[in-house]
Image (cartoon, rainbow, N blue to C red; front, top):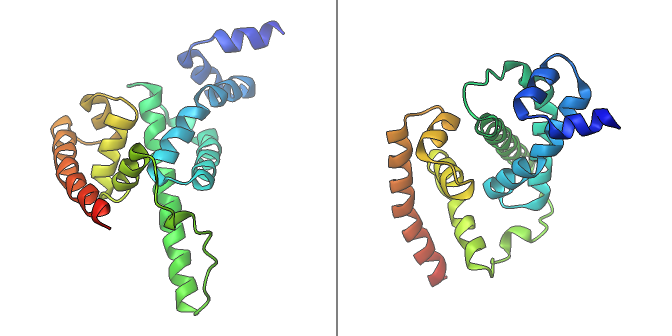
Length: 186
């Protein structure tokens, strides 16, 4: 029981160090502590609960190996966000490949109807528009406005300069105005 108390009170840095050394309890505590963050980021990225759950589970699996590569130069959540974005992109590419295969063979996939439902919540409508942005613009908006990171932390997560993050945010705002206007006209 004392071991569990120690793990829940340990800092991320301590847990990461122990997890790198093979401590499964520390790794488990780290996952539990950050699972909601990963799920939330995945949901904002893809907009569907089932896909967000799949992405979050994939991130958990990837972390088993990836934790060894974490150098600790920045915030753990910044690094974790980039792992989550990569998993989301991989899932999107895999889905696109499967769609192409399905269409190539003339087989029609069943559509749940979830994608065709118009969001009633204005905030969800805005996030739906964000998901239509080009990758870099979407990532910048999700990091800065979705996760509350400053431009420097977003730049670190995206492996680009802070100025480039600012430019992506600026371009995203212009594009979002157009997307939101055209969605309102439909």
